[in-house]
Length: 394
Image 1 (cartoon, one colour):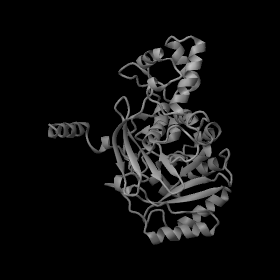
Image 2 (tube, rainbow, N blue to C red):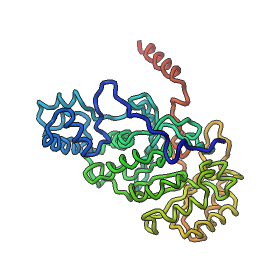
Image 3 (cartoon, rainbow, N blue to C red):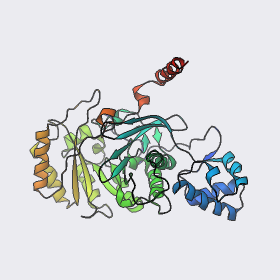
Image 4 (cartoon, helix red, strand yellow):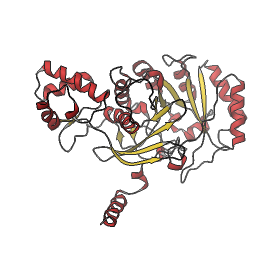
C-alpha cells in the first residue's frame, strides 16, 4: 500500500478556479481581501472600506446572497456589484434525510467537483461535518472516502459556504448565538484538514469571527489522522479542539489501517498530542477508535491504549466508533459485547470511552462512509439519468 501524501505537509497547490462568468465570489475573503477586490474593481479606498463592512454584515449575519436586498447600499450600485461579484453557494446535487434525522448533501463546485457534508441533529446540539478536500490521499483501509483519489483542496470559501448552506437549509438567518440548531462543527468530512492547512485555517477564522458566523472555537473540532508536523501550528493558529484518528495501538495494525503511521508513528503522534497548545482537562483531546472485529478490539488492545494515554499524561477522551460498512469493505464491525468490554476497561482506568451511536447509515452518511456519488456513478450515467427524467416529464 502506498505511503500517503505527496509532499509534506500539503499536496501541491493549484491555481484558484475562475468562474465561467468572470465574477469574483466574496465568500471566504477576509475583510481586507474584500476591501481590496472592491477597490480593484473601481471603488475609491474609503468607499471600498465602507462597502466591505456592509457586505460582510449582510453575508455573514443576514445570509444574503443577492446585493439587491442590501438596503444600506445605494440601489444604483446594486447592478454594478452584481455584474462583478457573487455571494456563492455550492450547487446541491442531492440532499438526503436519514430515518434518524441526519441530513447529507452532495455538493458540486464551480469547476464540477463533488464533495459531501453531513448534519447530525441531537437533543442538545446539532453538528455539521465539514469536508476539507475533494477526495483524500490517506488511504485508510476502513474508510470509504479513502478509496477515492485526491482531486484538490477545497478553498476557504468552499469550506465556509458549507456552513452557510447548512444555515440556509435550517432557516438560521439572521445569525444569532442563541437557539441555533447548528451549534457545533467537526472537520471530519472528506479529506485530511491538515493537508489543506491554510484554507482550513482561513475558513474557520471566518466561522469563528464574532462579526462573521460567530461560532466559538470551543464548539469546533478538527480531526487529523496524524499529520504531526502541522499539529502545533493548528493549535497555535486555529486553536480549536483536536481529534486524532488513532484506531490502533500497535505499529503493525496501524500501518495497515492508517498508513500515515508509516511516516509518523504512534509515539511521535502521541508526543505531538501532549504538546498540543491549549489541551487540558477542560479541553480534552478526542481519540477516535473504529472498532474492527478481530483486528484492534481485544482486551489487550484496550489495556495498551490506556497505558499509552497515561504514559503521555494526555487529557483524553476515547470515542469508540462501531465500524460502518460499505460495499467491498475488508473489515467487519466488532460485536456489541466486544465493544462494551473494550469500553469498560478504558472507563475503569478513569478515561471516558463512550460508544458513538451510528447515525445516517441508511444514506451512507455515517463516519467513514462518505464517498461522492460522482464516484459511485459515472458522469455519463448521471447525465443519461437526467435526460431520461426530462423525457419522462415530456
